[in-house]
Image (cartoon, rainbow, N blue to C red; front, side, top):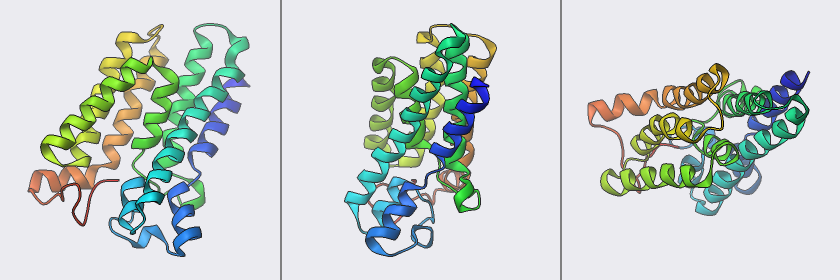
Length: 208
């Protein structure tokens, strides 16, 4: 029961389309008709409201963080390592919810901010800071947000598993599935990067 409840709550939390809601409420627009059509923070900022983009980033990360914390509380009676496994499964569900929200016909964002939120809840803060450093360095040197997101996603399981309290098959798979989802959602960006047509940060288009 703990598994089902935690995963269900995490998916529903993850599927809250904050970017879509904020742009709809404050700008009376559908963010899906702007730029890349993505509901993530970068595309929200592209709508002309950087403040809403920042709010979207924070809220998308917070929903992932909250989903994992709730799962940890629900699964605490299961003992270790089951409680941690439940939290990791909830993390995957939250990211899936953001990328494939039931409220928007399963067409959501790319999961970067939500993944960041679940990482904050699952791993030591130093691991998250390493990932943020990787992201920032790649953006500074290349100005490709999409490339930075992909490289950070690839780096996560390598760093997280080094500091994980245990490495059961469920945890290992969960830590690998999250970056796979994030990278898969960047398939269009990857194609443009390979073709040399991806837009750089600060220009008209960027990854969300």
